[in-house]
Length: 284
Image 1 (cartoon, one colour):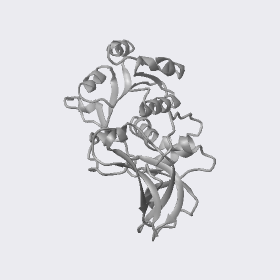
Image 2 (cartoon, rainbow, N blue to C red):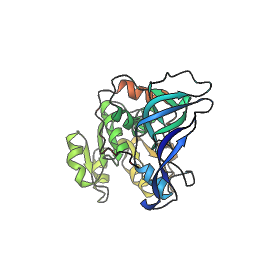
Image 3 (tube, rainbow, N blue to C red):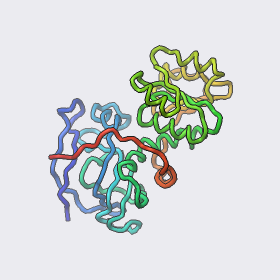
Image 4 (cartoon, one colour):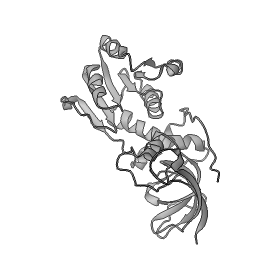
């Protein structure tokens, strides 16, 4: 039996005029899927880039955005018995999270521990698992290292900074000058990307052991220039156009599908403070 639901729909690629909230119905979950009533869904730059048609290998319009959600299991499809009705779960959905209900593959759901702040759990799913993949799984950050993070005041950059600090690293990074005070308060050293002073500053310190660079292209060469003789650079999302030093460059696309990784974040990083800027109600 279908269930009434509201969902955000990107009707065509482009500006905000192509964004609608529609009333529809969702069918019962098919085999190996679970129907989840969404409490919170994530909203980030990825959703904006999808609306603009800039996200790699994205769906064609129309589609419902929403990269992640936390919600309650309301129906189990055939073959699903891992979760009971009423269980609170999290999922990296990539699409469809910005709706009242979503049918999701059971294998991608993870349980949210009782007592967890559900808004903070929502923030963990995409941004923090990306940062965990970069800092812990790929970078293997350790105590005493110097780490440089481009976009340190952004969602993934902030998470990467905190996780690196939790491993005992000294963290530097680029961000807007309006965010300098906040980054300094958190114990990291901010630089403006545009004036390039960060290059000389890091070189004078002997270079960084790790550089996390989501910018790509020419920025990769600049990031390489601040590495210590044994340092590595990790690039997120984009491949470099010109980088002939592959022995010291790591290109990584965070492995979001590693549900065990996300479980670790939800269950072991409960001492971390996650910031969410704003909450929106789905109204239609």
